[in-house]
Length: 181
Image: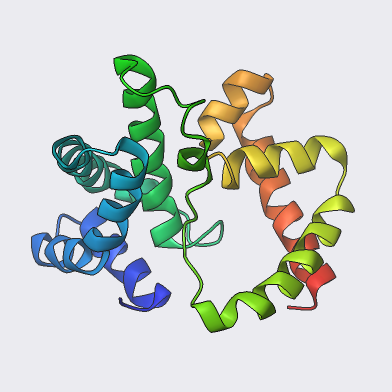
């Protein structure tokens, strides 16, 4: 997989309509996205369809990606995951309640040897998250854990989009400072 900086650069190139950059982005991320989709949907043909929809959306909305708010792969996984969950709910073939693990698909899977370190880091992260104002904590979790866009948050919570953007940015800065990053 390419580095985060390389993926950011590729998304910026895709924004300009660079088809070669889009092909490189696809090659670098397709296995991750397919794995997420297959885990949620449980059927290869559905995963392939949603994967195609995901990359069409990435092509059309690459300009909306904000590298200060998260990594490119996390953004792409959120697009794929949200679409897959919509399909599961619509089709009713598999109840999302019967497969709760589908809701918990991680954006980036740690290597087995890194799990112990991640546990300590996760504890620190949760501690820092707990120090946020409850409303900002909720917005941050809806955005980065549940994959809601700023527009969705603004509509659902009846808060101006620029306020959402500012709160997300400030909350991330508070967490970064709390974690000593």
